[in-house]
Image 1 (spheres, rainbow, N blue to C red):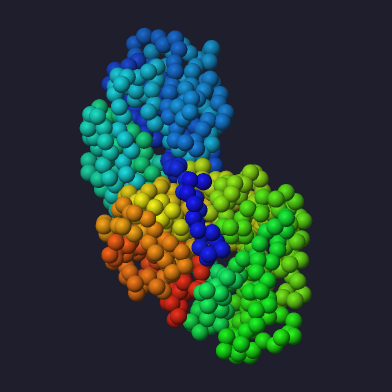
Image 2: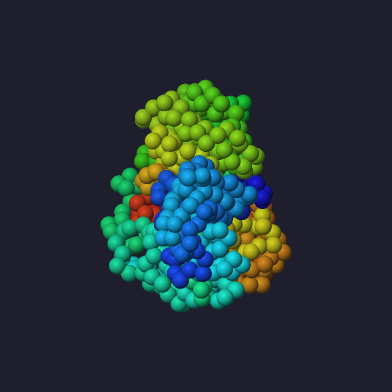
Length: 614
């Protein structure tokens, strides 16, 4: 973990930033490597990705003798980004030094007559594309002598003006020692255009369809460089509508009844109760391999006066159930459409899952016994497991293995049965080799109702000096600090791994993250530290920010505000509405938010989610 963040006990989430780049959809064949031209060397090497299964791929290289004399041996070299590696190879001896890979011919295939060719293949992990290819020390496309530098990658394309049949792509310039001649635009790995400028409008697309775009630069001697980070695009139209039982779910925190003075009754008085379908009650703890109570006093002991109570009736000293559980019971009586799940874990308490999943069956039994305790069994309609970094590092590091998450969810479904909800909050780290790659989420999906994809907290003032960046970008944008840290790429990666879109919920943060000491209004500015917040530095509720630092710009589908020397990013009703439209077009199962107390007293963000999903 490279950064630290506030704990989930204070009411906010985040993931650790990872220093890896992301390619979430196959870049397909011939990435970054040209067809042989007038060769200055006597051989070429051409790369083809032959298959892609999300966490890995198959590939082969074809070596061709383009000269006039026989080649008696060949060596192909290339670089992969961190997180991508060769796992097994055939018809060549493949070795590596760090991220640099070398393939040498085996005994029987080293000799190539003029015009002859031979191929070798391998399987790999990760999703990166090869760069810097050399064949016998010369450029693989046969156009340059050793020592000529290939172009750099252009900036990650930014998609705009998306319609049913077209999209405009814009990117920043690549660099090269010989100068850039043009750029190849690739759609789903296939070249669709070569342009000399920094923009291209791709047309003739299908409505309501997912695409992935990237760009490769070509220098004046036709060397191609590495591909830019991909941008996922879904065209509008195509009848994109939410599933019939679209989920509109919010987190209610048990600690919110203290300093925040937010109670179950506020869900009613804000008008939010009629606009939601589900509540996640946060959090229960995970200790000693079991589900345990998080805060007994707030959960079931706190006595409510008549004016604080959902139904206007005060608690008595001898009633069997008080606290939030009793208030949730009253809420469900008034709004019988609302389902309530008990959520266990969270950022601070995710460290207990590693021990618990050593015996998934016993863990599931302990959770069932607690959720279905006769004192409050009628309050809960299922369980939510907020294990935020399985087989990865967060507040602590887990080494339980990629299958542990799936095994946990399988045991939960077996114990809770078909009539209870079984869900989970999951990472949105779509970087190559990042947290989405660390666990078998697709295998778990068959046992689950949905995933709460935590598409917020991508960036924040734990990077005290900046650069300033929106904490909940919907898409990538030019200058984004970390590739793969945005909602669209996270959703696309889960879908590519085999998680049904209908089981993915888009996350919305009802708060902003901010810096101080900032002079630049646009994202990407430097800072001196976190901005002051009501409860902790670097974080503030939407209900405060909408008045104290109103939004004055948008980037990547979310809002930002520069006021004085403070810079904040947060979602507004307008950006929430746009994100809901995007979620519908993606065919997602709905949306969720963290958490109720950050909204205004009239629940305007909940209202935007409701309106946007209808």
